[in-house]
Image 1: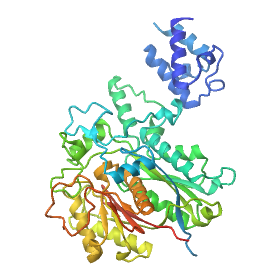
Image 2: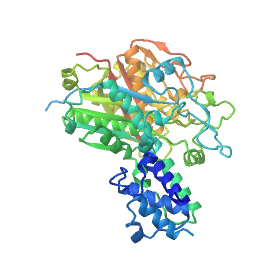
Image 3: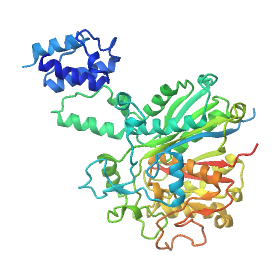
Image 4: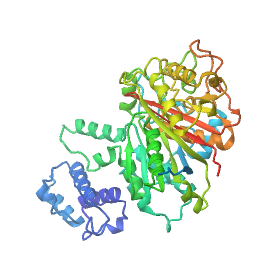
Length: 78
Length: 417
């Protein structure tokens, strides 16, 4: 697992209070990890803070799963 | 129509001198001070560096981490106190009509820490407007009533009352009236506050409202003492379960006391200072006794607002002497803020609980920290200085006065069929 993926997993475990084993690439924040729409907004903000970047709203809308978050960050974090 | 009767069937408390009702009451009677140096934040640069904090509390023993982090501390305190009260009331979840169950809570400020944290974050972050999505729902004062409504599934009237340090008393009065009018069977009421933050202490320091007796925190809150120099900020709250009497009787509920009156008045004078002749304080007691259908000589105990400020304490006392006349010298009077500090919007809740326990146990909790008589305070008054006093207590009055000149009082009576 990449360093980015590991940090993403830790943020999700912390914010959503789920087990690490649940944070699989396919896991959807809302359907699988118990997040509501506010939790999802907060997660995106945490990613922005952790990785020091800004995720535009139209991009954030496409981040619904753990894998999508990791992929976006691996592509955009410098 | 005839009004319904309202009884108290459950209580919970989270206070600077005890994290449940039993401990709170034991320490009130014993005269324990809850004041100590501030641990919530680094208060080194503040004029006041002590407060009455809730102690030995791990929020996560009560509320799972993921829920707790979406609540401001004032809401966490509301949940902890209410969990105790609801357990105490012992409702049968299968038969309770949730559409006739409400939540009317009080808080003077709401989520001050949340507001402070988010604004600090904003100013530290290059002023990029990246506010947390939970900022507003955590901060707004009604969040406590919303969270409690969701937690217990109560679908009747749910809202918050805001009248500074009278907030919880206003909540109790509203809950009482809604039940009297038949609009609810059951109501979670009370209040909570969590203002021991940079902004809370700094803001009250700027008003010169707080005691600055940093050398001796535990003796700083000294209502009616000649050398009082301001109030001591407290935090926490209490929950009371108000229930329509026939509803309580039908389920065989334990009844602590009956709530028989609530009244309000306003000083219409100054945004922070009380009226110098205690005009609002006089009127609120008059209105409350009239609401309860009582005569002055029916009152056995007054739990005063008595915050330990130089100006506030004598005006309430003058109003008591003027309204009660000769009976003022037969009653017991005490300010339990001498022990708990001032819980602002939560004060009316913990002090209502103290009145109810005084009726239960027939004992008056003291006004501690009395060292020197104040020539402005008539020595004929029994202010229950320093030690608790046993006496007959059938009817107790609780006074609360808030910034803005809002005054609210409630009366509890020993329950009889």
